[in-house]
Length: 227
Image 1 (cartoon, rainbow, N blue to C red):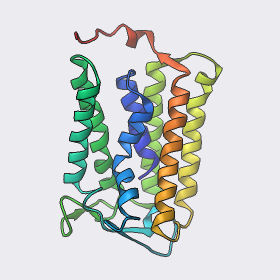
Image 2 (image 1 turned 180 degrees about the vertical axis):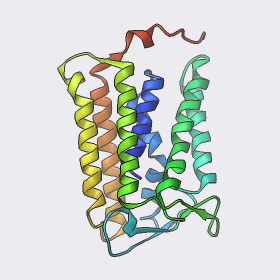
Image 3 (image 1 turned 45 degrees about the vertical axis):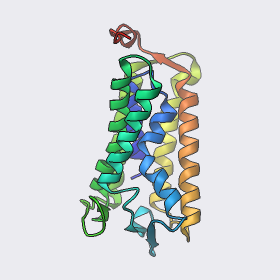
């Protein structure tokens, strides 16, 4: 799964408008960011088969980036970072939200992956295998649902704020379709570089466009936690 995780980041931004969208995007893709570092380093292993889309990339051994235990550890670390950087009692809500976004990565991957996601190490892999068109449809639904929640919780500050995020969502869906129909890169280094580049562009673009929207007045009137 790729673009579906961004839908979770948009929904999280709707739930807590004060959180930076760039950070939420990275949190939603954190296991893949770690994976994109460890695979070229030879710490984790993948195998690229003939075919198109993510289904052509077999996760041979990914215990440090995509096991349930590792993802839970990343979520706990993310909670700790937020607890240390957000002031007042709001830090617990912020930490819980970001931790949930990180953990959602494994849950959503388990829906679309073949049984190659370990609970802990090799021999404990799970996955429902909702691949191909059905898997992509799930991703599109997640993006559109996240976008709808985000647009309902915010109002545009200018013309770019009105059109920017829907255009970005449409571009993500188009790019996701392109990836699903394209052959993966020939080696892990190119695959990792492409992944990291895509995450960086999405995080930066989303943060820029989010700057052209403001929290809905109803959201602004919600009581804040005492500090």
